[in-house]
Image (tube, rainbow, N blue to C red; front, side):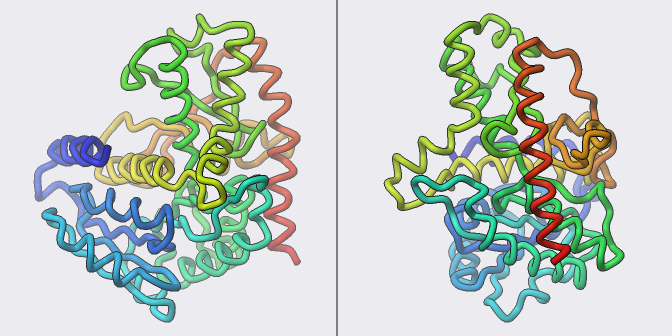
Length: 337
């Protein structure tokens, strides 16, 4: 499971000579948690990472000591609760998985009251210490925490909308895996664009844009869409209150971080869905939206339109936008208090 991302990262990094690849420090804020630990492990295997900085209120130095024994070239340093600024110094990428996980019966939105404050305070440190870094937000609810991070950076006068991302890659990963299960095809050969947001009905998989997805209709289609939208509930229930989808989220987070790294290193054609400041539905009051984005040396290079979609997907999008607008406004309201 862990070997495949490492091999993928290595294959990408070999596209650049040692002189061409930039020196890249990645900071993980929340590295001691259920997502942070496996995410840090996967990032240690990515050869585009030259320095890995791990921070948490507890446990980060131990995680750093553990993964520092892995035989890749990157240096690893762990920082305790009172060394946040030290952890962020010189970081080009900051990944934020910090916060509390979901428990049975909870939605991602239920996490808001706790995680909003955590994300706000971490974003303030980013604004102060590493204002030019790309910020990758994993902490839920992403539909609200990305607007919070953006507002913090904007208030500090350092906001660059091209460099703030909500990590929605797990929706893409699930869509490919679940579609493959329905059609009997390999997820490796299946690319599904997922647009909208990162919770429940705001998750809109564009199955009609994939050759395999076009053949899924009727009840099979309805069930597949529901599973993609609410797949996280399966894991929360299966773990019986002991956690949420931490391992698959770590994989997805590492995969998206790898895409950002490749873009920063100048690789062309790096396109993936992510939740960013977007003009696509701004006229409807939805100024953050996930769609395919081309990544490059400056973060977001191009926001792609959603393209042609089916009548069923039109209905899903219509249901998505009001909920997404409320989620975004909730984050903004938190910052205006």
